[in-house]
Length: 361
Image (cartoon, rainbow, N blue to C red; front, side, top):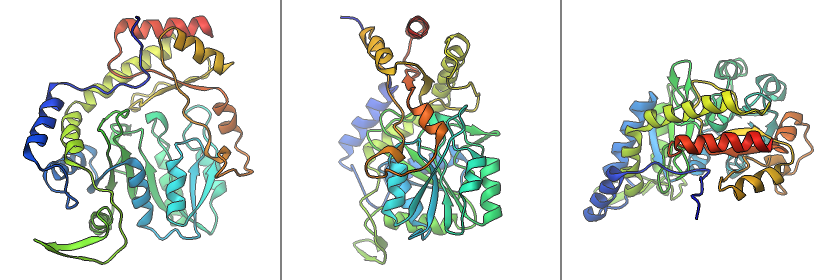
């Protein structure tokens, strides 16, 4: 039976195995207080990102939920792209806010700053851009809008761990930046997420988030504690943190491998609409647009190459269905296909993918 080339595949080795065994034998597997490997991961990740503070969580969705909880968005608008995973919009609803969908730049599929400006109203409280597929958004323009209109910036960096923006890591810019460490992500864990915090309120926000990630528990001293806020069961476990510490050590190396593959795709795939090459992108996935998508994906699968679709626009989902004019989003989403770009790909895998695409397109 021929090998299937996976769309996503985490890079793991003996160090991750040893870290799991050590954690298993320790009998200390989880703590809402965020001690042990969780605290170690937080500190190392914060240093890597270059942010003021970091809070580790159990998912990217939890990160988005809690980051938005820092700002009272009840009955206020949060501007987001529709081309994203649905958690981006869900997190707004969780906090009583109103998601306002904005179109994307057709070249990068990141939120379009020109359309963003047009969407800002007196009710806008937060801009929440997505660094789509690991491609950095135009943060200079977005930060400028936040300063001009006195609104907050929360970044969805679920795809963008290790992405750069003008020589600084994504995570060191916005008021709060949300990361996901799902098994398919560039930094893989069984389950995990984080919020990096920046600015004058970073330390205050960290304390709030540490309580909210653990059911509102605060002021814990030995076996006594208080609950002075509503919270959730969102803390990271020790197994995830132990794997994350090892994954972080090789993240830049693995992201550089992704960039090399992206450069090869950019040079050799004969498809007009495809993800541009950008040396700052972390290339969580690589997208292209094809005609007759169903046929293309079926043919790729028949040749043992997995592909995917990222994403069906949120504004088209039954729960969110809105009459909003997003021509770039709608056009791209009809033809989008994601192809493998993970570091486990061999040279022959990459060549096979390129040749198949050029043959089918």
